[in-house]
Length: 497
Image (tube, rainbow, N blue to C red; front, side):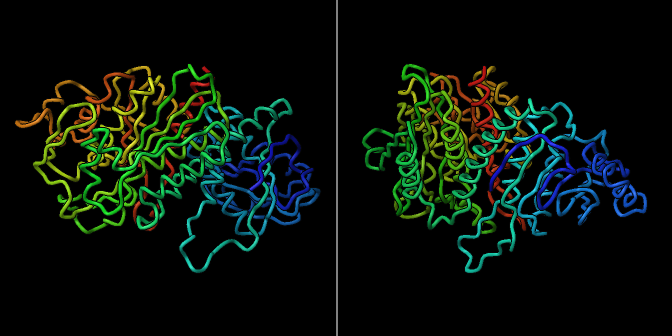
């Protein structure tokens, strides 16, 4: 897909289609009014006779509108003008792209980017139009024997801006939108792959390929034997039950001076989670291939940052493993020693994500990080608390938490902060070890983060629980690409501050 930005009049666009908005009830957008004027009331006459109300998501495709140069004019219903905000904007962009793709308009000029979105500027509108477009067109069909691609798909899209002085802003927005979309697509592809393909070794190969193809990027992969020798007893307690060995995957991007402290992203990469000896129910166990959503998310954010060649230092660490039941698997009641020297009593082998992450968090101390953000599909309790709308956020550093929350609000990939009070730590008490890996029935998301916080005392740290946001179930089953937009927006904010 090719994207461009321009400033021009809608009636003068030579393209397969011009896209304009109509508000409820039958109110043309500014671009629509311009076309209506040159066409001597052609659009307003159609609206008056009831062809379209302007309700959100309505479409009306017109051919050969008088005195215009485009082959088609596509009217998109935008709903009530006073209610037009982020969600409605994404809806109308997605509807426009779907219609263009289905009706043979291989190139189009879109004037929806000129609409007034509450509190949003031109940069936001163009960037999010790109992201919505790419999200709408995403498909994962590489394992199907027959493809269902559109016969004449849209290949070139131009977003119009109000004035020529906005062109530079629009071009920067396009670059960011393309980079974030590329990262989100990478995350979705990795997570959607079947677990017999996307195992820890595959993730390591993907990291090595990225390093080979990208300037300023290096890769290191530690195998299971090295992890054992290093003293990662919690990590290897998870990997020991699987035939496929675990990996610790490290990607480093140097976009700034070597002495500048890096941002470190840590991802939970359980490529399939059976629950281990504490076996999960069979229903929807296939979705446990998504338990590496944290790894996919940080990998995608890393792709976005390197695509933009941002002036920061960024390190990605993925703790990759399968959690399988076998004669070698860890048992409930086992006690393991972590890389930090602390001991953990394993009460439930299905609370394995925190075991691989705790050793990874200790490992990243060596990088003397500016901040550390770990991302994990960690707890079902997070889904109970927040559903599939917001990721759970817990942090030991208020400024970091606030920056992440603000980044989420700006990009639409939102998080909600939960408390990390000392009183919750008591739920991790063990009679036999320094702590247990389970905090009981109440506050499961919080006690999981409390566990991780014991391994994050030497740096500013935030934890994102994406159990509810990393994928969708049911008919629309598939990875969402979150939290790539949130992480990338946070890093963009750090660059511009």
